[in-house]
Image (tube, rainbow, N blue to C red; front, top):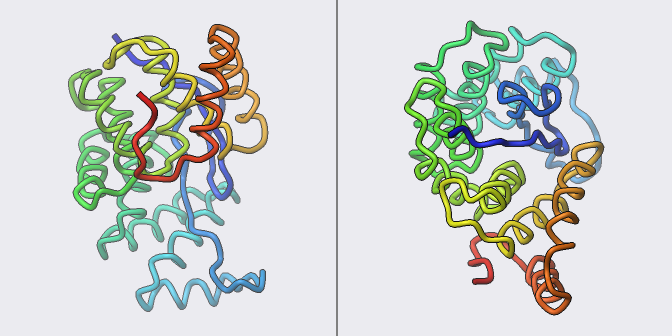
Length: 234
């Protein structure tokens, strides 16, 4: 059985479309860290990236993806990946899974995603879970996918939280559990923007309608107070 995963959109991420398996992976680039809101030029970012700044390389990748220049984006992402950046490795894993900027190659997707997972990177964990959920270059393995999604979700990855909420709602790879389905979808909804928020929020609200008021209130409080690494309510 393939796990149905709905696409979500988060800030500084390029998402490719709606709800099909090929369209649910995002390209991530770090936010500026200068605190003043100033945006460095492409030339400055390029210089920083060439001199070992992986965050700058990933920001360049984001800029070029948004401009529709996927090949240029991959060049900078690969540079970060080859220097050991978990974000770059996860980005390359996504690129090879989707065939954007590079020929689609699930073997190379697996290689890069596993490198990111070896560093416990949340995006790499989410990507590898995605491969196992859909059988992209690996056997379909709902149990393994659910465990990887959970590791990523526990770090605060909204994509993984949304996926994990789906798994609990459907009972795929995990026992069916409406409480945890609501909890993880609620967390994902708080971290999303734009139309993706509507998708996850509707799913969360549909689950909420099935819960007793006291249980719902308790889960809402737990979701509001949750911090990464904290175990969800049982």
